[in-house]
Amino acid sequence: MNTSLEEKLRKKSIKPTAMRLLVLQCLMEQNRALSLNELEVLFENADKSTIFRTLKTFQENYLVHRINDGSGAIKYALCDDDCICSLEDNHIHFLCTKCEKTYCLKDTPITTPNLPNGFRANFANYLIEGICSACS
Amino acid sequence: MNTSLEEKLRKKSIKPTAMRLLVLQCLMEQNRALSLNELEVLFENADKSTIFRTLKTFQENYLVHRINDGSGAIKYALCDDDCICSLEDNHIHFLCTKCEKTYCLKDTPITTPNLPNGFRANFANYLIEGICSACS
DNA sequence: AGAACTTTGCAATGGCATTGCACTCCTTAA
DNA sequence: TTAAGGAGTGCAATGCCATTGCAAAGTTCT
Ligand SMILES: [Mn+2]
Ligand SMILES: [Mn+2]
Ligand SMILES: [Zn+2]
Ligand SMILES: [Zn+2]
Image (cartoon, rainbow over all chains, first blue to last red; front, side, top):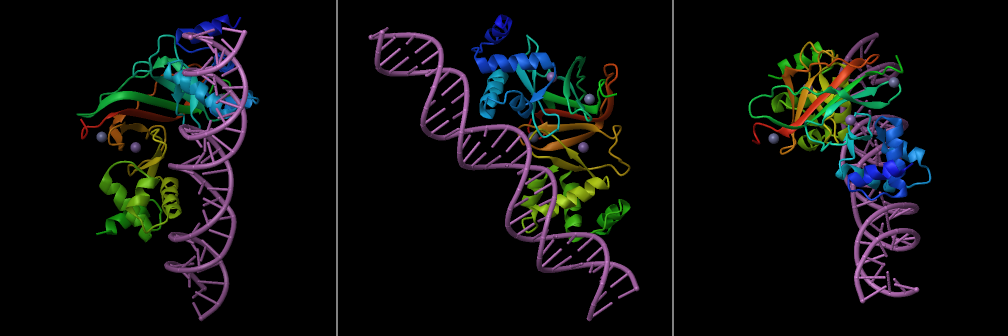
């Protein structure tokens, strides 16, 4: 059953370890962005730095992207299979101010505006705060 | 000459003190978003917490808005005269990854996208990273 | 001047990201 | 099979930034 998880890791050239499989599984199940702290709570037996390094490895191999939602803690969410975390892959994120959960709105692409003369865009972080459907 | 500065403070119901006038003047001259740390360096004789509280007072009275540009430190920039920091007042910010300076792109309004069912927006933080005109 | 309130300076705290070091575990080549 | 080398992990420490308690200094008002 975790064969599919292992596959997902291998496809991104990440050697599957117990910790990595657990973190990946968790991110897939939750289907939202999680902070290091949230993962730390879920895996009480694992060390924070191990989870941190797991996420770092995931980032470096485009398995997750980091999200700055202004909550104070960076959140991490799974990338699409073909993601290379370029400007084109950037999408809107939504932070619910009630439940504090952060979601990827991958169906809501970012429209990049015309910038003033001489400005060139390389990366976009578009965050919307509000109330999510579950909290409405 | 700082009469106009005092006026600006009074219009926002902020009592003008020496520190407040200096910070306001600095924000106006620089015409960009500044971090607490940057201000601390500019006013070496003033205490960090004093500047912090100055900015807090400015925020509470809609004289400045805080910007999360992912640099690790919050930046502060002057609001427009009639700003109440609502969703409508939100605008795009630009962080130059070369000079690390952050600018308000007030002429580039944020277009709020259609959100999934049940999601309601209250605040938007749209940051673009890239190279500014000065660094091109 | 004296009381009451505001502003400031100093020092401490707390949260989160990050890293050095040593130990354990796994892979591989002799 | 075994020893060496490399990868992964746990622990503890560090650094940076935001924030706050408390007392001193300054202001306002009577
Ligand atoms: Mn996302
Ligand atoms: Mn701005
Ligand atoms: Zn919610
Ligand atoms: Zn620049």
